[in-house]
Length: 189
Image (tube, rainbow, N blue to C red; front, top):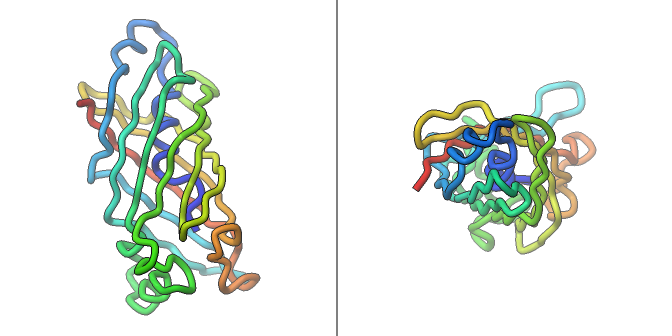
């Protein structure tokens, strides 16, 4: 399901720095993704409904280089066993070998390969996502939504195809696209 995960959002965070040089230099540094971040996803269903969920265990960091955004980087990992939907039966199914196979593959990871600024507060982040032992290139869009002191926050979105990762069970009743909608809070170290 995950396509351009939170790591991408983090990278996008780095790429969405404001246009003023003194502001950019204030954003420079290494940021650790805070537990207050939110990693949510949804998979649509024919006729309405679908699956909405989130992950409670994740970690990552990003290095923001506002003077040369292309040199910024992001790494992110999440525990697919921490998936929450509010429905124990659905959560157990998602953790099973039919979807995340959390017992065999306890980590979904993202490592950025490119960051491109798309505006004063928006960036595209490309990178390699690994889920169920399968790695593919994914892209996320990140928008800077908050900057205060040593903290920064990005709204990160991305759509991933489930089938390349062997998680397309239920298609076509359930969409092959998993939509990620994340708020990534980072604290400068």
